[in-house]
Image (tube, rainbow over all chains, first blue to last red; front, side, top):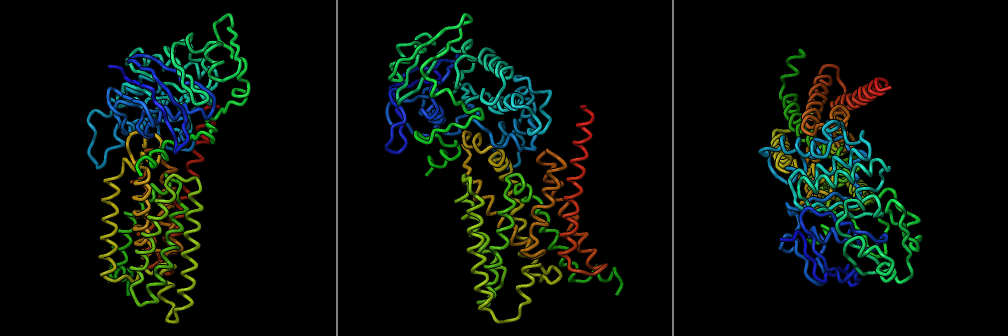
Length: 283
Length: 276
């Protein structure tokens, strides 16, 4: 069974369509990069998969069923976690919340200690797990966040801009970690990103969202001049460096002002915090 | 009368029971006040309750009923409106001034003896009746049991609302629950320290605890411990040396907070110099 199946999926907010015509599948043990300009609706895709946002048309199946909130097969690492910078909680306690934070009452969760220790070990965070979160570096916090999102053993992991606000060395470490989770846990991983290059070595599939359209396929199928020119509606040039990096020319507008702190300034097409979406969905 | 006779007199014992019940609830709820950075809400709820109490006195009811109604309604309103808003403080502030305006009106209409309002402002724990104690114990017990039941989801929602939402927790529900617990705790804390000094039991012990430990359960235990210590010692010092009980409680709780912050900054300085 595929992890994810989309057939001609469209998403709207109110009457405004955000994007339409997404058709692709995601298999276990693969990495899918979701790319596109700010505000094109990349995070929206993750929200729809998590069941926080209803789809307007088409069919979206997560493990063969309609998406629903609180799916224990889906782990999610949000774009900016407000708690991080100020939290006095230790990484270990935060990861523990990923395990039993949804449980009411006082009962102990069996095997929690081992599961937390294992999740921390998996992401290489054991060494700093007992320090308060506010004292950690960006890369260390990202590792803790990965452990928090994987401690309950989901098989699909959604990462919203996991490389934002990290220096190049830390980015490379996180990319290695994503690959490790894919290989060792056979997880399907969806990564929303600004830049394909840091991820290009581990990506199996690219989903590119722009101007309300969604194109998907392998890197070569999507990141080429004819597909991107078509998607953006104006000529795009792609220069390939000797090491295989792709430099996309013609998108300077979109990429001239990356938002290093991960805030998606997408007022037009509507980025909202996960938590707000959730409440909207309930009403 | 000897000190021992004073300490075992009925009104001091009543105060002791009330303080114990209040400190238990306030210490526990206070941890979440600090964690959620909602100290302003904690401060405001007490003042909003003051308007309710003044209104209740005006129509000849027990101020406790007015406190309860105003605090809980304001708590739910703030909980609903401020769950995900960035301008939560504005919501709290507008609710606060609206209620205080009403309080001024009620006070101006009331021509009776002002002692009742004075005790709401500054607390009058040495004057609590047996039925007051019953109410305080009941409400505190309810708050404590609720905190135990919702501890983990509330902690999760307070620490990382986005991840909590993705796992199926309603942050709105948590926000309303928290504000209701805060309102109930405020109502009982007002019996001891009054609306103006509610911070001393609701925020100071928890803030001190948070500076001293990063583990949630340890922080709650420490916060409750410090609230109990400030309450009991405050009562003892007031009986022994004189002065209002709420003054001593406030002084001790504030002192605990200052000491905790000092010890925390000394610790991090030492860590820093050890690293260099």
